[in-house]
Image (cartoon, rainbow, N blue to C red; front, side):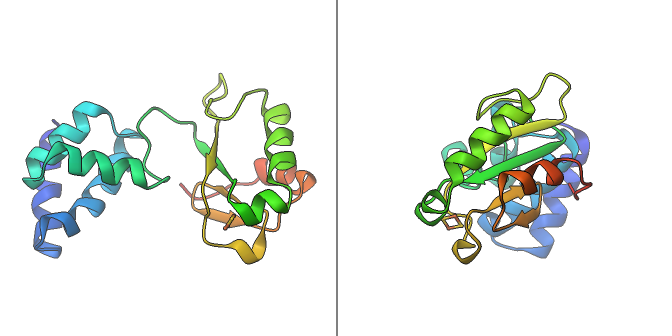
Length: 155
Ligand code: FES
């Protein structure tokens, strides 16, 4: 556990007095620094917040923006929910796999991109939808996706 995590946990608890409310901001802050949340980190966070490890793990695994393994600088989520599947998310995913030279769930050798599936990203009216880090794009064609990969996006 890094010493600053105790300070961050204290700050999160001051802002959100309930531990399960303070949990998400703390996880987010640690992931910004570490890039992902390992099992050891999850256990440390559980200890800091006085929560069961299983609870913290369930929160981390539920949200697609938390990562339990190292990821690339740009994390590309392709929505595979029903609306997006009907609108061509399979084709979009296949195009991105070809373009990046990786399969879904993998990271490029240079650490630049990770390609992941996501369940409904809550933007069904824009299907098919992709998310690159915090940026949503949709409807997105395979050609648009190629352009998107070259653009700067916020972490
Ligand atoms: S199914 Fe893709 S955003 Fe809802």
